[in-house]
Image 1 (tube, rainbow, N blue to C red):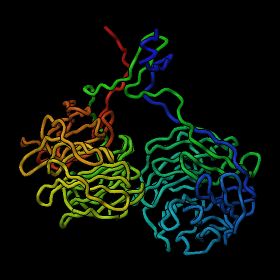
Image 2 (cartoon, one colour; image 1 turned 30 degrees about the vertical axis):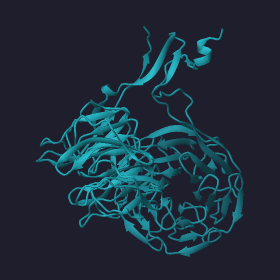
Image 3 (cartoon, helix red, strand yellow; image 1 turned 90 degrees about the vertical axis):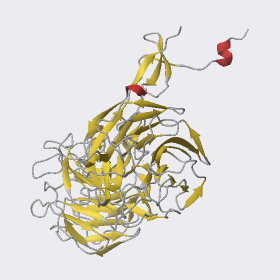
Image 4 (cartoon, rainbow, N blue to C red; image 1 turned 180 degrees about the horizontal axis):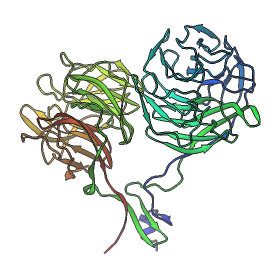
Length: 607
């Protein structure tokens, strides 16, 4: 006779230890094709499979330019001015080379069009050993050596260099990366070798966490929130150390196979390239390719079922939502309410966008898990718009500016905002959801009467789809496209408690909130969501938090600060609530709180 378990059974994984809450990724360097010309102090741009290396010292200063296709290097047209210790920005087909030493220190700037170099306007301050990053039309040259260390920073707009805010610590031989509005510079010498790190927000430099290993003559690959620094020299040796920056701290993750300094860089923090350089044996042409190695350990996943062979017990990974709590975090730089947010972002990386400061604001702040940094502003200052997407790809649409309600839709690519196709119906107090700048949903709002309109963005235009069942404004919502949740809101004088789910075609009414309110924050998905704060019928703002399990709402741990018109990002397990409006006389707030839930292993028992 067949066993029931054979017919209806399921597989349970066997583990000798309980699953762990998280593991860190590591990385490794492997061999690539050698350059044709061994050298050091060269510059480079591009990706791991399309890189451009140029200039350097052999020991003569040279203008040699080579292109990498992922396996081998090909010589192409030289720089017009041979030099080393130069700065670089741009891509494989559109690069910028600036400064360096010929000798003496140089101010020469050249642009690359994919086949040849052209001289353009010089730097204002001739120098070498400076940090350089950005694009061919928007670049930064920071600090460096000009007969002595200089703190001077210059910004390139595609045709000319302009001096801007100085770094805090003048130095040379640094690593760096980023854009003209979000950058990072690390390491170098003053002349003392340092691990100092500074971040750039487009207007000022801020000192932050040092490298673990102080060194000079290193390079970097990546952006200001995710970059690796590799190679270099300490006070006693050439090293191959590679450290990863996550927006708040450095972690040692790998070493070069061949230690060296003053290499050429290209790529990202997960797929990087380091080529040529020098070490104790001399000048080399070696190329190494870096790749992040995924974690191999077991990681806790909600609902994970397994057998612990050490304790002989069945266990399940369970989230205890009622046990979730809010805790104080670092406040935003600017107090405000009625902001947008990158709602699908993790709690360790997110954006708060625009809002009422007052007046209406274009400010955008980025969260890195421990602190807020101002980043590139919106093009249109406003409050009460809708938003959706993640911290590297999101949209902000609708709202109210200094004038009438707006229909403007702005898209974020991780470094700047671009105005794109407007909403069909410009309105304020709208809400939104989405997974990226190409997949967004806008619903509700008012102008001046409340709306039930829903519009969907496909990356190029907005299309009206089926309306909500209940017209309202300031109606918190979250999720992706096509599945989204909307709960609460305001209709005339009434605080709504109605909850609706969108399935990509239509809205369906489901169980109401326990307390009607509007202007709260909401994170999560249509299956699991968290709503916090808001303006209920009572005369004061609320701290109430409710958890949606896909069927009904349950009251859970309150915010530490009661507030309305707040926003945030994250999941039902880990979320951020930022800003809002607190009861007078305080008004706008910058208070930030973090929600966390224990994801623990629990033994399964049977009766």
